[in-house]
Length: 207
Image (cartoon, rainbow, N blue to C red; front, side, top):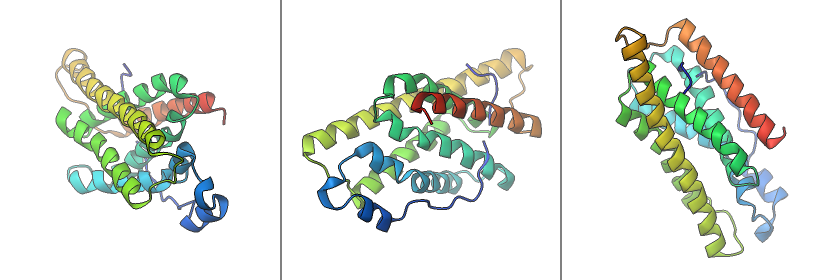
């Protein structure tokens, strides 16, 4: 378990427009689900952040950049989870999800609220799949990939809950019963841990 908690969003430009998708993957040639995900990472992260901020009225506005950085990092792992690096990515994903749960404690969230926030990513993905279904060579093939992605998200939900519980116990026994809060020191530590996770991710995907 990572002993800390917390993220940082900044303005994000959409790097891939629908027109670029059409020109790069004309017609039925666009069948690569990991690539479909990769081209939508920015929009998924933006939609997830919007959904989370729409529910959480307790967080201070200055926390939004940290939360944005956190959600962007988590979403950026999804394409790799559908590719050949899934096994190596699993521990990185689990560490990030645990840290998100720990971060939730500092934000004053209950365990159920952390789980609900993580589930919002699934909702954003479902909406995008309905609106922009990727062309596929077969329904069964596409369905199996969606199931793999769903299981990957389930792991994230579970680990976020674990991270939240572990942080509460740590605060109880090591912090004198005082719950963590997002102080500048906590935010700095979370950014440090996020940077470490990002480096681990780069080591997995080779970029």
